[in-house]
Length: 179
Image 1 (cartoon, rainbow, N blue to C red):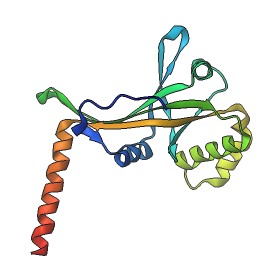
Image 2 (tube, rainbow, N blue to C red):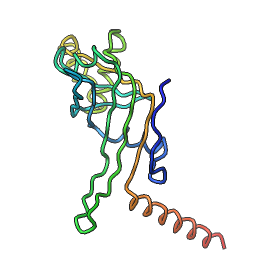
Image 3 (cartoon, helix red, strand yellow):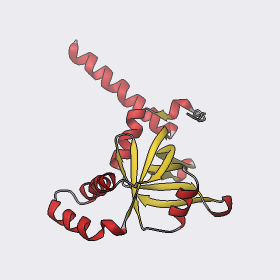
């Protein structure tokens, strides 16, 4: 496995569980690939997170597909909070970045399972409509799997301090209730 950089501001680093929670709740992020001529290619895209992987769907061809076929290394960024604080000249943010290997799903069973993940995520409890959509459109759709090798989450120092204060107050309240 490749070596990934550690986070410089470790106090602001989110736990793996918090980072995964953001991936589970969010619906879109930015996929970064090595594009034409060695230029980075970053594209906003919907996704599903499941079992340490990200899944995307796509048309059969285009810049994104060419980039994936040329280089399997990628990163993906999700911004879960972006609260600009003009008077403080800062932003209260929370974000996650994943690094890993990206592949076009070739196996028909995995492709169908991945498409079902999307249907159930974005239009839950409509199995009949999903089945019809898959029968009509699956052959014209590419499914893409991103195997996460490294995951980091980070939040603004102000949010970290707010959480620490909340935890301190919760611990104090719990101690007072036991007394």
